[in-house]
Amino acid sequence: GTAYLRTGEYEKATDLLRDVTEEYPDQIALTLRAYGNLIKSSRERGQAKDLERYVEDAQAYARSLTRSGKDKEFPLLRQRMSQLMTMAGHDREAAEWAEAPAQ
Image (cartoon, rainbow, N blue to C red; front, side, top):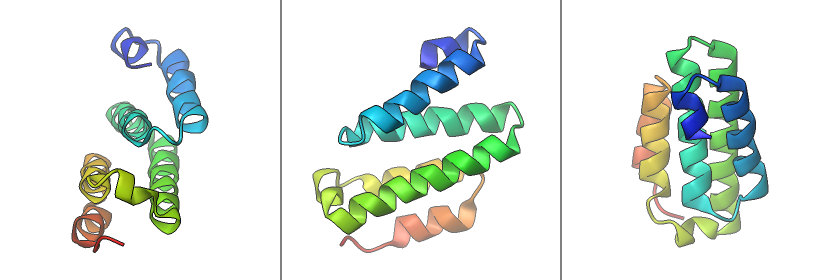
C-alpha cells in the first residue's frame, strides 16, 4: 500500500492499507504501520474526515489489544500509539498514550 501512496495512487493505497488492518489484526506492528500510513497520508492531503476516522479506528484497535491482554505481545504499543496521535495532530491523546500505565 505504501508504494501506491508514493506514486499518488491514493485510492488503491487506502484500500490495501485498510485491508491490512482488517485482515491481519494479530500482526500488531504491521497493523499499526498501516494505520500510521493512513493517518499520515490523510493529514498530508488535508482529508480531515478520513484522518479522524483512522485516528478513531487506531485507538479502538489499541484499546481492544489492551482489554484482551494482547498488548503484552507488543510492549511498544503505548509509545507507537503516542507517535500516531502526534502524527495526527492529537497532542492530548498522544500524551495520554505516552503516560498510560501498562495493563
